[in-house]
Each structure stands twice: as C-alpha cells, then as structure tokens.
Length: 254
Image (cartoon, rainbow, N blue to C red):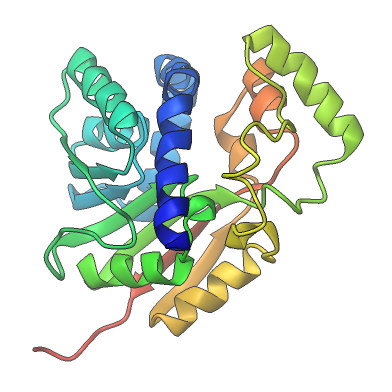
C-alpha cells in the first residue's frame, strides 16, 4: 500500500511541476551552446553511430530530443501524463520523431534486450526502489549495451552550503524560478526516499555492480560542462551533477 501511495505522490508531484520544469529545459534546448554541450557529452559516452535508445523518466523530452537530433532512434517513457504532454509538444515543435510512452521505471512494458543504450536524467533519486529500476535497465539492454544516467546527491551534497544556496537563489530569481533549497513537496521529498540517506554516487556503483554491470565510471561536474552564465549559478552551483556510465555484462543465451 505504501508503494502505491508513494507512486501516486511521485506522479502528482511531476504533474504539478511539469509547466515550470518544461520552461527550464526548453530554455536550455533553445540555447545552442547548452544543447551542443549536452550532445557532446552524450556522444563522448555513446559514440557517433545511430543507436536504438530508451530514455527512462524523459520528463518534457529534452534529452530525447537532443539524442534524436543526433540521429538516434529514441523511445521515451515517463510516469507523468503532464510531462508527456509537454514532451510531445516539444518534439513536434522541433520536428523530431520520438516514441513517447507512459510507464513505470520499475516495471517497463518493454521486451528483454530491446535497446542498444538506456539513458536517464535526474530521475533515479525519485524512485521507491532504485535497484528494481537498475534491474529493469539491465533487462531491456542488449548484451554489452550502454547505460548512462545523470543525477545528483540532492540531500547530502557538501556543495549545498547556506551561502551557495543564497547565491543560487539570487540567480534563480533572475530566471523567475523558485528557491533551489526549498522543500516544495514535503510528502514527495520525505524520509522514505532512498536518496535522502544515500551516499551517492558510491551507492549507485554498488547497485550497478550487484546488477551485473561492468566498466562502471562516474563523470563528475557535468553541470560545469553544460550550463553557462546565469543558468550555471541558478541550477548548477549547489550540487555536483554526475553521470554514471556502465555496460551490461554478457549473459548466457536463453
């Protein structure tokens, strides 16, 4: 029962946040320098050849659009109907073909070994059971497939000092957004979230190893690569945004 309540709370949270979050990411996509920086980041991990990619927790679809623009075939899943509505509009406006689907990251309605790569941005911290999500990522990846997800330690990062939060808040006000350190949804961001007490990304690496992933690496300071000027101080000044990359181990044939 608690799982159902928490999933309902997560879905409701992102439905409420869809408009403001969409505004933030659309501005980033419209900024050619930021968009190219993200695309260079993905290409350094995924390579240049077109891949069949699953974007889990796609939100307003900007990562999916960045990848589709590079020539990848992208399927995108999100729990929030409002986020998916934003994503479909954004892709249509950009003239990009992406397969958007509603779905739960912990129980993907996708066949085994379907994708060359799985990506996810700023999603894993929100789920009730991260190990189940990682297991699903492994299941839908082809053998030797690539996993790349970006996230942060939003609760325990030593960069989130009161002074840095105040500086970030000033720049957030310039961007017209709320405080970076506000707990705007206490039930959603409550003690039941695994990420509240996690040691990240060390715990991430342990979970990936337990799930059979190999070649696990962490790229720190992604925000310094992709955010610039006011947007860096507003959105990247109080946390280390890290990308975890790994490859699925070779499994026996079935």
